[in-house]
Structure formats: structure tokens, C-alpha cells
Amino acid sequence: MDFDISAIYNQMPDFTTHEEARAWFKEQFHDQFLLKTTDVIDGKRVFYYHLIKHPEKYEEFVNTLRSDNTEIDSLDLFESYSTIEISEDGNISFTI
Figure 1 (cartoon, helix red, strand yellow):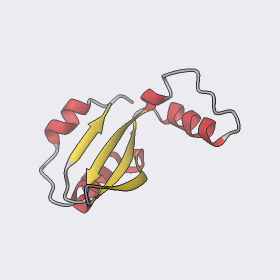
Figure 2 (figure 1 turned 45 degrees about the vertical axis):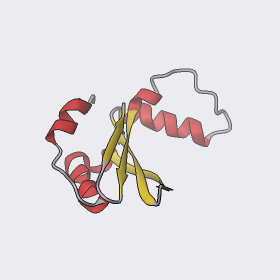
Figure 3 (figure 1 turned 60 degrees about the vertical axis):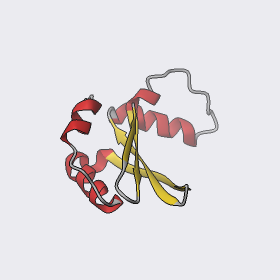
Figure 4 (figure 1 turned 30 degrees about the vertical axis):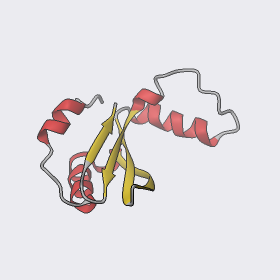
């Protein structure tokens, strides 16, 4: 399933917290929106999520990363998701 990232961005309301943004994305994308990690940048906590566009390819990607064979020979696996960064104050950044 392909997502039109531009359309998603244009449909998003303005958020004031990470919790608001997370709730909106979970409501829209359910189990295709997964928290991967967090970090602190310039004193603000940032949450990194994967928005899964192609579940079968994404599962293959994750399994490859978990295996001893970490050689990835296709960009298709990286195109199976987009990364969404949400800061604690609700700012959003997408990678395609």
C-alpha cells in the first residue's frame, strides 16, 4: 500500500504535543505506525516512527536486520516504510 506523504502532510492538523501527533497517526494508520527509537536533540525528546507502506517487504527488511546475513541487496526494502519524527512539542518531520 503506497501512501501519498504530501497528502498526509496536508491533512494533518497542527499538533502541540507528541501525544497528540502520535494519537492522530495511530488513528489513521493503526498497526502500520510503529515507534522505533527516541533521542534528545537540542534538549528536546524526538520520537522516530516507521510508517509501513508495504508490510510484506517491511517484514523481510526487519527479518534481514535480525539475521546474521545483514547484506541488503535491494532498495525495495528501504522503500517499504517512511520515517516520521515527532518532537515532544508536536513538530513533525517526514523522510520518504
